[in-house]
Length: 128
Image 1: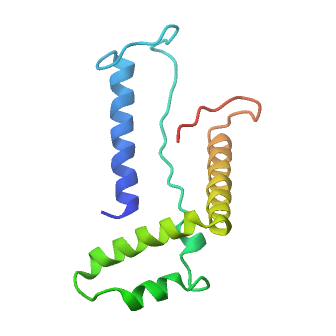
Image 2 (image 1 turned 90 degrees about the vertical axis):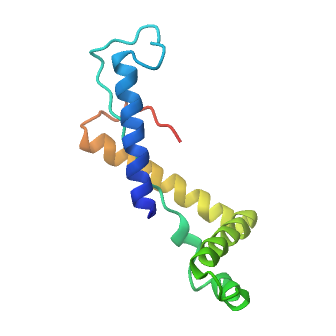
Image 3 (image 1 turned 120 degrees about the horizontal axis):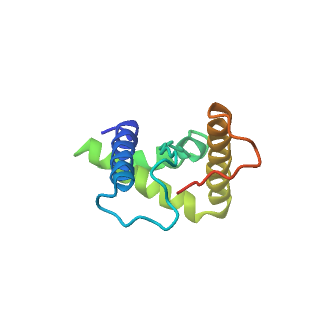
């Protein structure tokens, strides 16, 4: 599955859980929670992969040179995972990753706020 398909699958699961919570099935109702209260779950992907996985760093080229040709798809996944760990462990790239994620999350919340006409001073619950 692509990450987009995985996000869609996760979104459907969240909506299903939310619908069960609204109907009182499968969860305890919180004190003060009203059935008429409007709620909406949106799952928005945040991608930081492109921030560090590029030709400028040279890590991918080095990993490709030492990667065995057998099971290429599995090797690609393993190389990406190893690359992610290497990048995040480096202070320079860790800062880039965190900055990119924070920036994209803020933009997504602002876009949600504008799209749904939510005033800037109203709090929007966000789960990570």
